[in-house]
Each structure stands twice: as C-alpha cells, then as structure tokens.
Image (cartoon, rainbow, N blue to C red; front, top):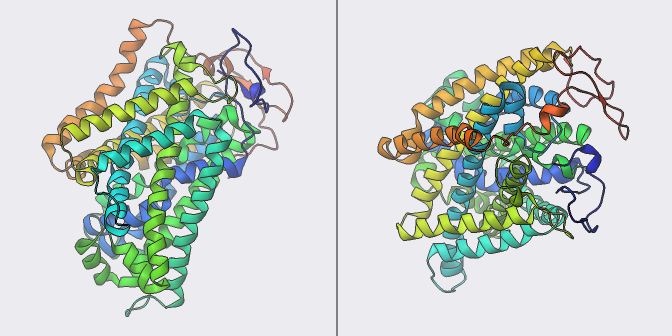
Length: 519
C-alpha cells in the first residue's frame, strides 16, 4: 500500500518491475468532495428517496430526518477524522475497525464493506437501466429494449472511466454534480420565491408532533441511506494532495453540504404541496412528484431538465461507487486479504485497473442473475439491494465508532476528550439506535420478512467470511500498513513522520494545524 509519502503527482510515470503497487493523484478537498457528494446522488435522493420517506416514513415531518441523520453522522465524523492521521492507508472502514478492535474484526468489516458497496452499486444500476429505458422509449421515441440492456451499457461506460486515472472520473463527476445540484436549487428557489403552496411554508418538520408522526424510524432509515458514501473520503487517501488535512476537511464539507442540501430540498418539496398534499402526492406518484414540482414552480423546461439530470445523477452515483469499490479491492489485495494480483496499478494511468475490471465483471454477473430471474429493476433490484446496503452502512459506522473509542483508550496519542471519547460515544448511541431501527424494519425495506431474513443472514455471513479468510490465509492482515503506523506522531506537512514506540504509546501533543474540530 502507498503511504502519505507516495502521493506525488506521478500519473504518467512508468512503474518499475517489482515495485510495490500504488495509486497517485493530486486530489484536493474540492475534488474529493465532488466524488463523495456524487456518490450520495443528490438528485436521485431528492427525486426518489424523499417521496418514499414521506409516504412510508413520517409524512410532512420527513425533512427533519435529514437534519437528525446529519447530526448523528457528525459525531461519527469527529472520531473518524481524529483517527485518520493514525491509520494512514486507504482501507477506510475496515482498517479503522481493525486498528481499534483487532485483526479478526478488521477482516470481517472488510467483507461487510464489499457487500455494502457492491449492493448499493447494483441497486443504482437497476434504477438507472429502468429510468434510461423509459426516457429513450417513451420520451425520445427510441427502441423499447429490456432495462438490463441499458444497465449493461452503463456498466461498460463506468468500467471504462474507472480503468483510467482518477482525475478523469473526478472531472466527469464534477460536471454532473454541478448540473444536478444546480437544477434542484433552481426548484428550491422557485418554491421559496412563490411562498410555498396554498398553505404557505411547511412547519411540520419544525415541531415535535410533526417529526414523530407516522413512522419516524422508517423515515430515519431512508434519510441515512441518502448519506451512504460520505465516509469514503478516506478511500482516496493515497490520491489526495495532502491527506492529513484534505481527508478531514473533505469529510466535514461533504457531510455539511449533503445534510443541508437534503434538508432544505425535502422541506421545499413538502412546502410546494402543503403538509397534507405532499403526503397524498408522494403516495399517488412518487416517481413523478419532483418532476411535477419542478414544472409547476420553475417551468416545464426545468421539469424536463430534472428528468434528464436524474439519469446523469444515477450515472454519477455508480461511477463514484465503482471508484470506491476499486480502492477497497486494491487495498485488501495489497494487505493479502484478497489475491495480491488484484492490487496492481496501471503503469500509465496509475489506477487500480485490475480491480476495475473485476468490478465491471461482477456487476455484469449480478445483472445477468437479475435478468434471468425476471426481477423488477425498481421494486426488487433497487429496493432489495439498497436495503442491504443501508444495513451494512449503519453497522460499519457503528463498528468504526466503537473502534475509535478502543483505539484512543489503548493509544494515548490524542489528549482531546471531545474528539476521542465524547463525540464517538454519542455516535455509538445514535448509530446503535439506527441499527436497531434498520434491522427491525428490514422486512419493510425489502418487501417482506421472508426475503428480509435471507438478506439479514447474508449480511451476517459477509462479516463471518473475514475470520474464515484469516484462518485460511495467515498472511492476510488488513492492518499490514495501519498497525505499523498507528502510533505515528502528527507531522509537519511535507516533513517525515516520526515513529514512537509500540503500545503502550505515550500521549503526544496534537499539532496546532490539525484539521479536526476542537470543542
């Protein structure tokens, strides 16, 4: 694996034979934020999850769930970013879990992460194939092909971009993200300037009774699903310009942007219809609710643009998750958890090209299974796969919060109680509640407890695969990089890290330029 010293801009440098595989790039805060927010798919959430959250969750009070979700994830982010400097590799979730809870849990988390991101990618491919096929056939008068044909073409395009250098994907995602966020802000502005619907602006999400109406637990599940991907900033560590500063700043920026954007946009949608009208509209036509809102408050042209940009939002989402999955596989291969040949980087693009090819192939295999079993691309593929991903996401963050607490109790390298104890502990409580709500409502997410029980078992099995791999491959260690550098004193930018003795590690002063938030 590459360390922070390996992140020079060497995109066009040939890799000498026998040299360790590494990635490179000069991604700054903005580029990484583009990657992460694109994975969150803002327009997809506003156009798809918001109507479902209103219908199945807590009605007109649903916008508050995004604010609550952002607050819970903020406590997670405080501990997560505090630990970033002490686990300097790009494994993200599983290396953090391993550094705090040990090798077996790190291995388990690595395979749970693979399942989580593979299923959310599969979910979006299903939705994208259905949406793209509908636009081509119904709106453009093109051929009426099966949804999986369009999904396969999307997989090929994503695979091509993922094979090349990360900067190309970053530029593509940047353009698409600006377009989709911009069009939603235009709709939001139209609603605000019009003073809302006939009943004025909605206040349901500002009152305890409105927030607690209906099924707030289900509402929180849909809201948290919209944040999947914000934590992936650490996956791009090897390609960041200055990872010790860039990763924490990008994490906070991504969470803040996504949280505010979702909350305001969901509130604007509810305000456009009125509290009771929003619930009725979401139940009657969830797919077209946002498009209709855009046409009514910003004009038919904007409504048409929303429909088109929904497709680009879905594409940006799967491209971002493809890049994240590539780097998970690359990192796991580099530490022997997966075959080391999977961790090779391209000589010219310096990209994880082998991992990209594997991800493209696995996505095509899953697509073939979905097509052969005649699954509905939205009601089954999207709903079922996103249900698994939501549960895996919450469990991974919960494990990471616990790992942060344990890590800083064992390694007294950071004396700040807020960053290393109080905030992570609050995060454990909040994420524990979210995990309970997700598990107990899982049958509703995937369309029944028969399917729900199977997927719960699959989620548990993915975690157990890790220790099994550890037994079969004694050299497999997700901490191969992290454990050796977990006790590294924060260093001056551009200067070498200074190693300190292994556990127990004496407390060290935190550098004055540390990017984490202090109380």
